[in-house]
Amino acid sequence: SGMLDVVGRAGEKPLFATNLVGDFAGGSMMCATGILLAYIHRLKTGEGQVVDAAMNEGAAYLGSFVYNGRDTLYGN
Image (cartoon, rainbow, N blue to C red; front, side):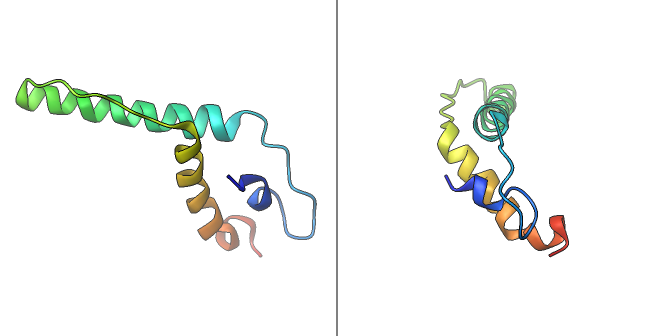
């Protein structure tokens, strides 16, 4: 999703992000958020929910924060 382009410092090669971007950030962050929101909905209404979390979309969503905040994060 283009995350390697924004990971690292200006003028240096991108850092290898291993599985942090897809598995942990993109997959588990979005899935955990969906589960918590579905649980809150169940407590309020008694209805169940289907949680659909895509790792690629989650990584792109996270990447938008990194990309838009790169000057603040890396001091460029």
